[in-house]
Length: 395
Ligand code: C5P
Image 1 (tube, rainbow, N blue to C red):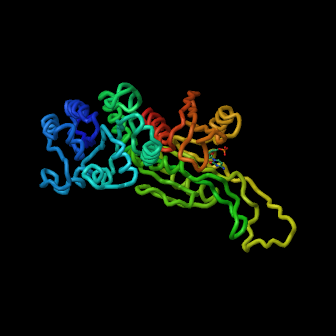
Image 2 (image 1 turned 30 degrees about the vertical axis):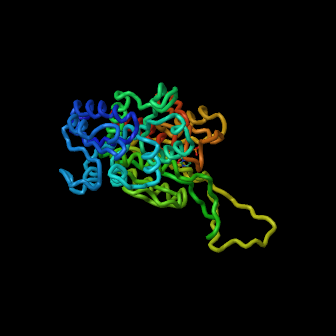
Image 3 (image 1 turned 135 degrees about the vertical axis):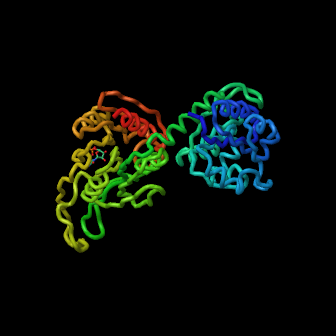
């Protein structure tokens, strides 16, 4: 798994920096090419020489050193990396990454790289639990960074608490999982829908819903990062992520045609869009004037895109419910002939529309039920894609 992988190991200036020696050593023994990048303060805790001896590679500590093997160091490292793992990560590097500041070799490398980035925070409990650190970590998570939670126990600064760098085995397992995820959908073709459709009443007004499109965008980004070719069919006005083919639609009917076209060669269709169930029967070509005391709109049923989508691809649907969550979700799974349904209770705090997080339950065709804790939409996306990936390999 780790053989011939290029792992950029970022080490920042915390007392746990000495543990990075063990991480570098185990990764090297496992066959990885470990390129160590140290911040200035990390070099106060351990010497670059130690890491050079362990990895057998030059260690990068500054933007301004005469170039070694890498010419424009941060760009070369950023491009060569299969993964960037920062362990230990101080509150400082976490804040700088969250803000996009690139004032040293490590932050520049991260900013210039398309590789997945794993961050293992290690610091005093109060610094870790400080709302600003927590907000910064949440921002990184939402952008797809993988955060390895710190362990609890005795701290170098005295006392007990959360903030210790987890054992090497835990960090290496997280690196392996991230590397698997970074290519498990290689060559797969995944269609994702997002946003709430808008069904016109007249040239100005429409019937719509509260969907922000965030879940679908997170799915598209996660699938792209795992190697898939992604078509994102969106009814949301937000620009789509880079590296993804974006098809913008407005109505359910338009979305249905786009889905039919995109799924011709698809391996999976994930319908995260909130499709309007009804549309106005007649669309006025001119703006409706407010002359009459009241206005009655006649609505007609829209097609059920997911139920009508035909093909041998994996079908994943969402059930946003405000009552009888699991029962309704199971019914939809069966009615729409899905492989997986993602059930979420939109009345729960932190779940549903326009927020960055979601708490969902995955139900599959075999009846397996997996209740997931509250997590970012990006993390939910990866959990869904783990299952899609499993189903695709079983085929
Ligand atoms: O039946 P309900 O609207 O709750 O089903 C939700 C799931 O079905 C979502 O995955 C949604 O994208 C999809 N859907 C659809 N076409 C519709 C309505 C919903 O594909 N007209």
